[in-house]
Image 1: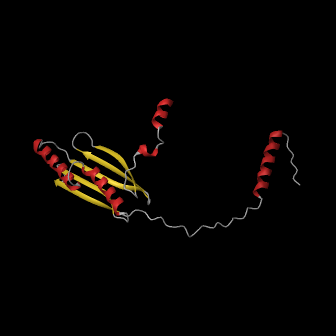
Image 2 (image 1 turned 135 degrees about the horizontal axis):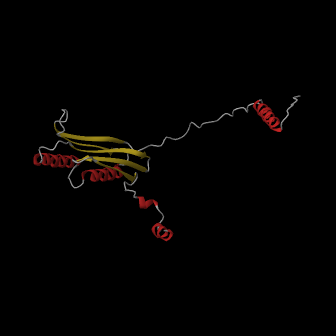
Image 3 (image 1 turned 30 degrees about the vertical axis):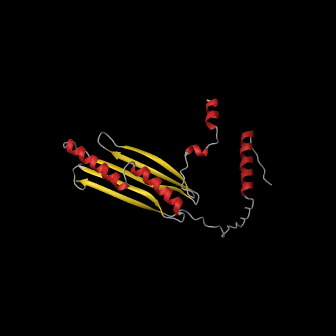
Length: 195
């Protein structure tokens, strides 16, 4: 038996707390339970794709001068088991990159020609000229594909311009999924009423 002799109630309280904590620490630890992790989880087949790249440069890009023109793109190209849906997605990706040009490569050629014309008109401008577009797959499931696109362009001035965009596709149909497709019909009027 533990006998506590103290002259103040605060000391008694502290001693009781220490004694209680030491009793709790002496309890037996509960036995660990066996956890059964299932091994027969089916593997989800994702969409097969590859990254394609096109790169162009002109001028002194290895030397110390800044008279260098670069145009680079790295983009997603689907080559999976849904040929029609994947063809639709590939076409949408290509259209987004090439703009009004007939091909992605022609779009880069157009950018290079614009830069060359700029340097011919302003030969003393000490700057580079470049464009970079890079895509990456953020989500890849049998029904949904999400692609991130980062674009950077430097066409003179104090700094370049950049932005990030996203594409969401229904992987079984190839249709583009817009943000508004994820809202309940009439959300805009309800939102306006609350504002």
